[in-house]
Length: 558
Ligand code: ADP
Ligand code: MG
Image (cartoon, rainbow, N blue to C red):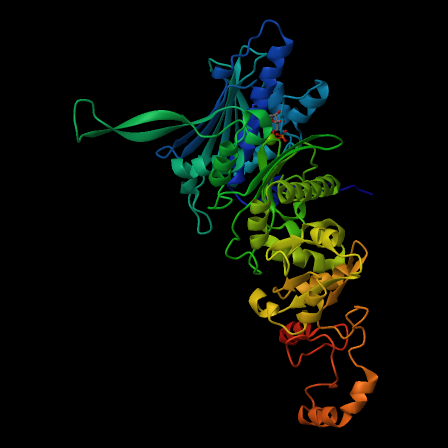
């Protein structure tokens, strides 16, 4: 029997791979810059371990050079370069990562952020280029080489001249097609914004030449164009800095730089964790509610970085819904990324981080409540509703986490109070946490149903938000005290326990009967009440659901 070989349509395979793993073509630049950064990291590492080498940070950089006339885009680095063998092994073989090998050969410790691991990122260049040329000179070789490829057809390598150690990747940018405007990748402003987006926190400067129009010397209105070399990236991520080096202003300007919001953040939270999972995070609690916050359009999430490179814009798994208002980012080197580096292979680490973050947000909010009441109330005005939804959703699964953060307007204090404060003030003979529902505090305060409870000297919480009572139903109790609506039939107040006093009810039986008939279908019963002080009449609810809740429920779509 003859054994047939599959004919590998390798060129198509490469195209398919390159075009299917990345959701956006622009990430080719992220990949090439990451490689350049890795190459510099390697030479830096060599310098640390080799006495004959010095590493002067200033002479290590990445430069991005578009050339519109020649339709080329060059990414130049002053990194470690490649020998002929390395060119063959690392660029000649798909899915072979020289960086991964470097990491395992050398005991790389903290302070390095070598990014590469899959050995495919380089080929992302073919998403935008029809020919890719690499000119490189290795630290370990006197000769330079030129590697050229038009895709998986193969490649050529020839000796070349290059003075300095390092690598130049030259892309021949494709012609525009109907789907893609490749010219874009030759535009300085576009390249700058891609660099800012994905590679802002690469540790080495990424430079570009930009034209600046300046006033001609000795003139007042004559301008001349001047080319200046600019560093595009911010390099040191704020979250990797020491908290003690940073001021509140630093965090605030980062908030605006990142366009998390136009408001001032109410609170910034900086987390550095170096435990079983290592991560850094900068989180913000905004002051004002985004206009679409309580709508379906709103997308919660934090930015996710891996070793300083942006992986995801909005990672929703990092935030529980009830803290969906939090803005910010997480950077971790311990994530297991999938091959496109746009998703995670498994979410164990992510879950750990999310859990951690959630706890931290809660404790920060509690701290705010304790130490800066005014700020907390501001926060609560904006996002208290979200917390209450949080208690209500998932069948109260989060009530433990959230109940201490809730606040309601108090009849006694005439301001927002916590459940804890309510309990602490309760007279000994009071058995329930009383609440009353209504449209506004003003209107609730005039409800006849509140009279008896208030008369007893008991505090009443005013529920004006339609979610309030639903949330409370999920809580059921707080510190073992049940919640009770002032309009429930049994108020649980001893001497006035019976609303309906049998004898008196008997006496007015006829009157009540005719009233009932008049109100037919509108009330279930009419009886004598002891809870009133100044009002002649009030409504009480018969079952678990209060009148206010019924209103909300009847408004909900079926
Ligand atoms: P990865 O970065 O995941 O290893 P790539 O396909 O991006 O995969 O790159 C493959 C390998 O080619 C790298 O691991 C590295 O060894 C080598 N390489 C790529 N670009 C450069 C460069 N600019 N300088 C030195 N080596 C490079
Ligand atoms: Mg790479």
